[in-house]
Image (tube, rainbow, N blue to C red; front, top):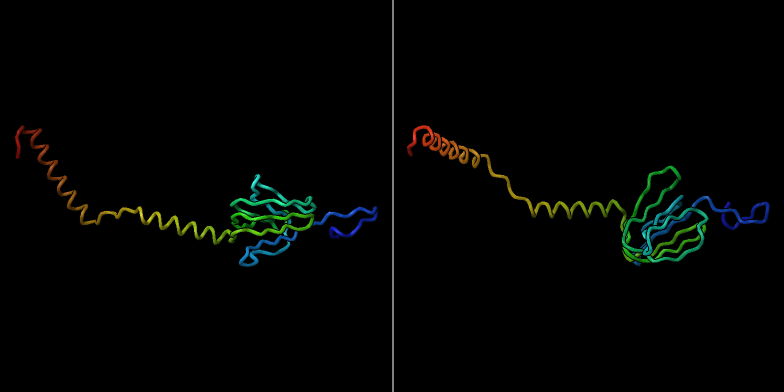
Length: 153
């Protein structure tokens, strides 16, 4: 049954799913049937299930997650700003910017790798260790000669 079909008591039945559409001015990012949506609303996070009362809200930057069934793992999109219109059987999102979370994660990983490489101090070469060890051994020998014999070599 959908939100428009009356039950045998004359009341409208609640929908059992939501139709989610997420888009930007550049195009549609996601469109599909889902069970649950979590939005990064400007006034705080907002969970939406089928039958939700109509709401129009602004969005902050954050993860928009959704599940395709009650026991499914959540999937996610990263959105930055925009508007969300919620109704009993739908959620329409017009985001300022939106990407699939895998793309956002890949971008974050690449940026983190770039920062790490920029801060990376190259390890000394093995030849450097040999030279340092030889100099240290020589200094230790001089130190022990001073301590044991009271003289400088």
